[in-house]
Length: 75
Image (cartoon, rainbow, N blue to C red; front, side):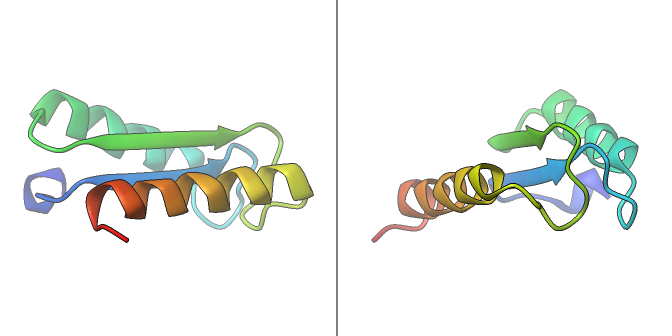
């Protein structure tokens, strides 16, 4: 539940995910943005399933995640 999330968060999600409904991600992101007390980053990979198939999308997700960790947790 959004009210239980108090830390910054990054999400990488393929919009053709059949394991985790894409709508679930957009709903939680919207609720967290309305809540307004956490920093949230969202990467949407068009036409990708749960496990990103395209190398460029996997690399973008990895890079965004590493950058997020460096910014908010430190090196």
